[in-house]
Length: 264
Ligand SMILES: NC(=O)c1ccc[n+]([C@@H]2O[C@H](COP(=O)([O-])OP(=O)(O)OC[C@H]3O[C@@H](n4cnc5c(N)ncnc54)[C@H](O)[C@@H]3O)[C@@H](O)[C@H]2O)c1
Image 1 (cartoon, helix red, strand yellow):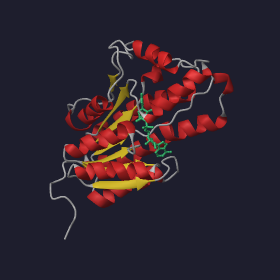
Image 2: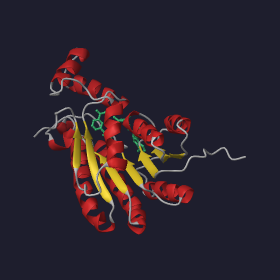
Image 3: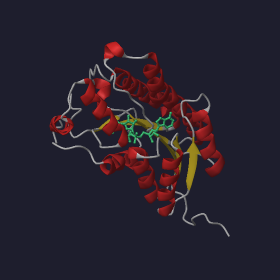
């Protein structure tokens, strides 16, 4: 007897970096809307847990575990979705990496690792999914960028430069895929208290000589015009809106979910 859920699949989705944080919440919300969801992440245990949550919502899940920066990984992940479900309707490029390092102490390794995931792998995933979506004449890609892409952050330059790359790739991919009715947009989340954000801010406090971590965090939060950090669930809701509900005429856009932080 088949153990697969009996409900019809609304859309076939791939979420990179889905083992936790924003990616997990996006995967679960897509599942609750009836999508089959592939989760690509380097963290096997986190991927398995997200897949369990997706199935708990009555949806099908595919676990794609591995380092997404390896040359063939984006192609292989997209192919896994096509092999399993016959096509791909939604790609969320959410996997991200960043290191706090004062600009004058920056290492080659940090720069290469950051750009390999946030820029090169993201571009290759857009290309791989874009080719399938071109042939289908439908599909939506959402790239996760950051308010940092438009800021001068000397302790976080590889990351902010990589996210400026995401903005550039989003616009180029949107134009390349527009003739086929495929939409490409990005979303810039504000500060969300995920694993990545927590370790980044601890390191940021350290390089700035701050040992009063909570006061440091409160100061950063107070810079958000809405006066609070973003809930992962509300940011994920906006990602899912771009994936499933945004108008067909919306492409090459950047949606800011930053509580007004990214206002200029
Ligand atoms: N948290 C925030 O405040 C914030 C703000 C702006 C933008 N973002 C962006 O949101 C996205 C999600 O971040 P998050 O805050 O949920 O962090 P997170 O650390 O919870 O998620 C990142 C995921 O990427 C995966 N990953 C890292 N390296 C990988 C690799 N080489 N191959 C495959 N997977 C890999 C991690 O295992 C993790 O599951 C990122 O693109 C991040 O830059 C986050």
